[in-house]
Amino acid sequence: MSEQQSRPTGRLYGVGLGPGDPSLMTVRAVEVIAGADVVAYHSARHGRSIARSIAERHLRPGHIEEPLVYPVTTETTDHPGGYRGALDEFYEKAAARLAAHLDAGRTVAVLAEGDPFFYGSYMHMHKRLADRYPTEVVPGVTSVSAASARLGKPLVEGEEVLTILPGTLPEEELTARLAATDSAAVLKLGRTFPAVRRALDRAGRLDDARYAERATMSAERTAPLAEVDPESVPYFSVAVLPSRVAEATGPASRAPGAARETDGTDGTGTAGAPADTAGEVVVVGLGPAGPLWLTPEARGALAAAEDLVGYTTYLDRVPDRPGQRRHASDNKVESERAEFALDLARQGRRVAVVSSGDPGVFAMATAVLEVASEGPYRDVPVRVLPGMTAAHAAAARAGAPLGHDYAVVSLSDRLKPWEVIAGRLRAAAAADLVLALYNPGSRSRSWQVGKARELLLEHRAPDTPVVLARDVGGPEERVRIVRLAELEPEQVDMRTILLVGSSQTRAVTRGDGRETVWTPRRYPEG
Image (cartoon, rainbow, N blue to C red; front, side, top):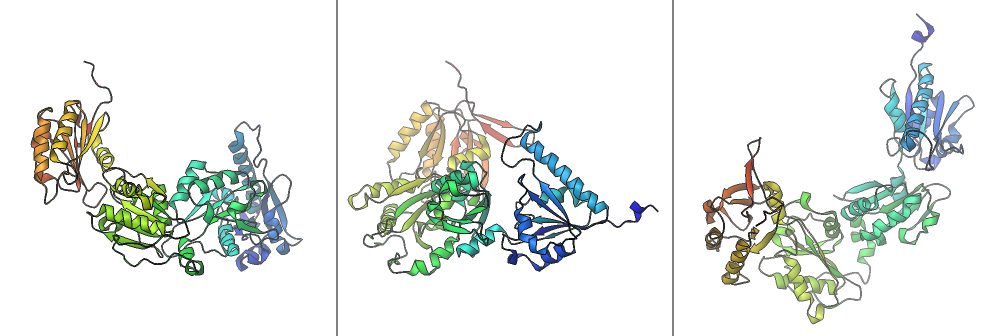
């Protein structure tokens, strides 16, 4: 047997060192470093390694040190494979150097700031070596945990969601994710800080954001993020959006001057007199069903609200959050609900009025703006956040029936005479528009569907495709395609929307046996 064959294989360790303070290293990390033959660590070309400085007190003269020096960090390179090619080549060479030690039977400890598997350089060695050698990863305290601790701000509580983001993401993506999440930590700042700050501002979260630089190290700095000079921000810094629940239920929320409880909870009472603090009303579109249809902006507004106001059925679709107050009411008191929400905002409360679908389509935005145009409420800020409409959700399920010009009409005669509805149906049908028909029927109102069918048959062929979409996105979703002449009133209710094709709309059975409806974008001449 050769010496190479008899020599035992070495063991690879990825050692998490924690956020910077050597006293925050785990006992296991210290044990592994002390027992290792080789200690490897990454550094930039200047040769200084933060990882080595953290572990320095545990290094001994007998250690073989392997500095893994990056060929590039943020600068340009003339490598034929570009920046990524240069790094891939470096990782391959670094892994080969460590493999030589492991093949010689030496134990190798690769040092990593924070946790080895949390945006760490060690993972590039792990991917190249762990399938060939015995490996152990020693976890470490992350920079996010350290920042939260040093800021004295809890990250998440209860059912809150924590989002970890690299600051190198595109600004638009950062904005959307920051708007949608409860709590967040943004890493890799440095030169990305201005874009991260703008994203926090556009997401409406800048006032809540905190900044931690070199947390637990000697040069530590913490501050409200809005006060930080962008030119002073190093790479080793973290932006933190702490727990909203902790803020809402902590001592500050119970301090003198905090917004007081309203007397009523039915969503239709008088909320009280104006307050000194500025409130606002945000009318939020929930989309047609559950959370998959909710936009990031809408999700963020719901999380930020102190009060939720809306029809009971729609409020039930919004998760409960500690510290929020919910004011549910019947579906037929839109004006009263709007006035109640605006009164809350005059007290300084942040109010979200929820609405199914898009709030500007036969929904609560109009009711709120109508009341907000009256004297006492003209100074109350009102924002409208769009949502996925029922028409668009139904169209997507059926194919593309709204691919050309279309009209949207409500068949409800509760707020307008049937004669007006009939005239609009005739005009839209004569113009050969696809029709999206909202509010087609209910238990107390069933004859309108039959009348609408008769009017449309004056202009449309009997075999015109009609999409009946019920509870799209919900547990009772059902989407059917019938022909106009076959449309029956008992097939629809208030949870159904109808999409009636034009003369150009096609219904095609595809290879999987499903019928798909689409309207060509090109309209024939003549």
